[in-house]
Length: 432
Image (cartoon, rainbow, N blue to C red; front, side, top):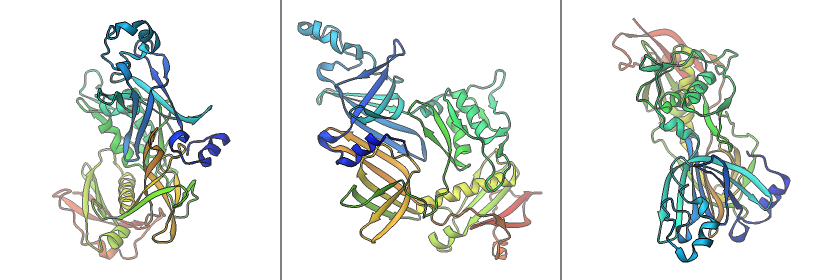
């Protein structure tokens, strides 16, 4: 949750965020010729922000009024000779600025109260001559990780990160991409041992994202974007159903609409994690019993840096957690609140079921305009069915002994060791 002042919180709760009561949009643009920020006044008419925990790069679109083409990138200096003196001495400073890679930052507020909200670089500019507007779509700083190519070590076709903690390895690649990353070192779940990544490699013609995404996805972490353009390496919370809520929504107060979905699409209950000649298979009993009703749904992934059993176990747990989060989801439209962030816990009352559940935020679509006001669509989910617990011997390990993974290797044999982490069972494989 973004921290706001008492005055801002009172303003948020005093009226619906529509019409003249919608918040101000404070937009700063970094000039391409001087690298200094200037505020764009009187021309900002709308903002749309799309954030998703599974997509590390968030996007936002700012809509500007473009009367007389004053904001257009290709505006001609002598177009209106009769009003040239007034025209070019007022807002002509914005001309030739709206190009890809121009830097923007946006704050949302009321009067003197402003909350820094998002920062990014222009990816797309659309000029609509009929409506007299310009739509500028920006991508947060992860854009550099997405699009910049890997620069190999001189004399080689690849670059290898020094062996180290997960956070240090990810930070190494972020720095190579030109993005500032904050965070803390990571321990192997359930232990005090540093989570070591070895052999993380990037090759020529790859993008930096191709290297770091698998590491982040498989280590219970995500990338949080800060309003100053930096990123934070954040742990994905292990929320229980009774986690205290930071926001509450009820119909007739601040809840506009609600849709709930239960699905078994694209959900695997068995994951085989392979690294070189070694692989381990993991079965999640909650997904097997409650989602697929006993049908085995298997998937194999190759993770080059998961060189130990504990690393492969944690990778499988992360994939099972993401699968559980797909099972039960909720989409709600609510009166806007700029303090809401990804993974915040919120409480929602469903009048159809008469129940009030706690969910956490996996996606946020923010809309602000003069016509429609300020509202947000939130994608919510729960971790119901996932409870991290110490490993032990599974009470019915004999049920797993006939499982076979022929796609791993022709020379794979089943290890004698079987264990359990709550609902996650595993079989250990070694090559001959």
